[in-house]
Image 1 (cartoon, one colour):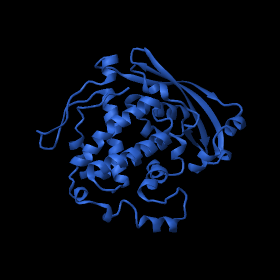
Image 2 (cartoon, helix red, strand yellow):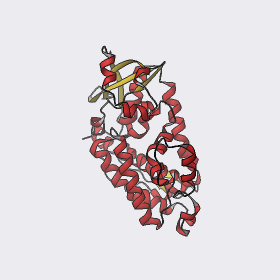
Image 3 (cartoon, rainbow, N blue to C red):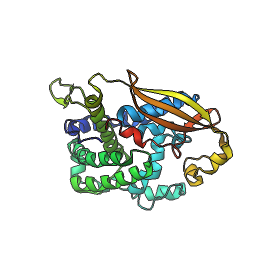
Image 4 (cartoon, rainbow, N blue to C red):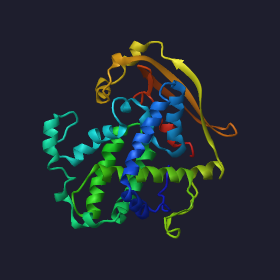
Length: 310
């Protein structure tokens, strides 16, 4: 759906990101807090999850509302399942801590893997990497969005390792490299939908981001407003049958047992324009563990939410 966003200045974006990379990484913590804040209300969870996907095509951050974030910060889940296998050869999720510490000594994030190019980069080449990765990320979104998150992360990070090696000429890889490129692409994809306003650097002269028109603006008008609203909450009557359909292997990844699930619901969410024009709808499945509701992303399909501007 999204076109290459040629007006997003990756080079300058990357410079600003590397100057304060913690700002990017703290986004995960901030968003996780938001997800916990609304987590006691099934309707709010469904609306926030859907709205995150719809407004900027951001299925990446929407996962903060899902079972994947039940027992750990979502960023740590991503590191453990998808980053560490590429950074630390021989790593396997759930491996013995002592064995992991030994493997880390020879990880690709060590100084010995840094070329002079990597050591001297001020963010320009990191921006080039993100720029080269964007068409690939957009293609992943055009296919199925973030529903199959495992495929997205695996394919994206494998491609990122190839592209970074081409640009930098070394094998260096770290979670900061991965998060920076991915979140730059997530931001650019969102901008391709919403459009952008002109932004200047601290010198008030250098243009970091040009003004652009997004796909939503083209489809719905410059002053469009998309509204997500919960229309109906349906309790799953046969909870035992519902839980039996959940993948035990996937639940184990999230540190969840089916026995913990005390309730499940299906929330119908409508996506409309401010004037009431219906753009799409979504059936969001949720499960309750303790007092907290989580989107059951294993049962929820959001593919249609990535095509509402078509």
